[in-house]
Image 1 (cartoon, helix red, strand yellow):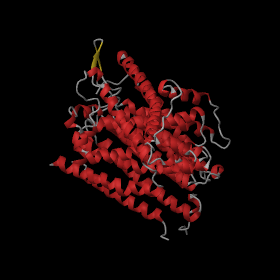
Image 2: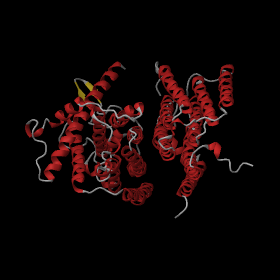
Image 3: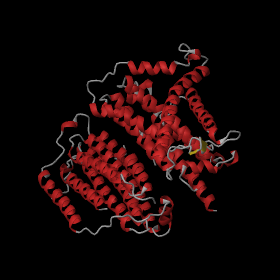
Image 4: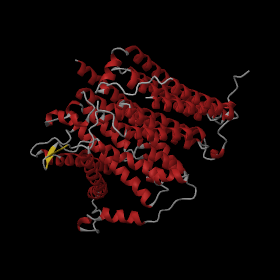
Length: 99
Length: 330
Length: 170
């Protein structure tokens, strides 16, 4: 089980790196998906090794997938909007709300 | 364990050969049937009745020069045909072709792998098919390909939802996801799920045609406006892979449709070992229907296609699902 | 549930290698379209891990929703937003060094913790054989409320996305 957890931790770290370094808003979203998946691996691994006979872990992973799908939909809609208004998807440029 | 591996490998090889030959002769059948419907003769030079035409075509494809245009992205360009070819073949791994039978003292199951989530597997794999087209459209670096790719991915996402929903009715009634159990439940012609799910079947048929990019939904490769669509820039063997992939997809959705709505290999008169014949006959009818449609209908316009998918098919699928759910609950 | 197969370690290693490599590609490649492709490979690998963990249903859902829908959506927006000429644009910002350091610390720290506190069981527990049915029943009984909430969330996301992407009516 420790291997699964290690894999998830590495994946999460990579996703974290991506979120912090990407300029492109779509790139940030993709890195977020990586982090979601890391969490899901953990959920399923916990379910398999610590969950007894229950399925709660898998169920939560299912919810994570659904929420991630919703997040991707809205996120990409926002990206399209940014592209339309700023002629680019560079997240660093969208700082009009910054003081 | 070893015996299982050997048996599975043999089954895989047989199925692959059958499917690939089926693809080749599906092209022949298409040309012949369309020719017949248009008062032509169709291929008739190679062999008796032109029966060797597919083989001649295959040889021609294999020996043509593989032209790679200058502006392509090499890696994705090379990946695209594979990405469209492999998923269409993967579906056959869970399709039950015949009843279990005994061969030289051994029990043989009529399916390569009986997953308990069979239908979900089929849909998961089908949803991968879009990548071949998207990759091809993107990597070719040509506007016709790109337009074809974008159109196709929009079309496939739109129709996939109705495609999935049209099946859920059957699953609700059958209470299983395993394709083999589904077939076993439809043991006589009166138990075929088409009688319980007529609307579901119509939806499945329509969406399946759209999923496989066949006429009248073949916008991604509309010859008259997009040259060849996503595979404009492909030639030789790579093009052949797209071509085989398309026909393998047709056969795959025909197989799944047969399994879900027409009782799969179930049929009278034949012993278990030969029940595959019924399966082939049913799939053949499906294929004929496909070709018939192609010879009959004009192509949809793009906005009509989208409107039809979202404003007609999708609500119908939801209504079908609700009604089925209510009846099952009763 | 059968005993652990002897080659499960090898298969795990394979999937893990695929996942880590493609994830690294996702965050480092210059061309955003290639990143999306690497993401697809990565998500498929995660589905493989799910199969190893006896979560077949989740694996199918993963392929169906993530690979089949979310990734297509991402590729679609890549196609719509970046014109073909923008292939050589720098994709990373100035934070790269700091971010790399932070991620490294996080990753190393997590691995170290895992190594120090070796409290994790080696063998898995027996899960119900019929994956799908159990999950379905749980969804309709114990987890009814989260299920409904997620449905509402989906609806809200759908409407929100449509409203956002529709733009001004001309």
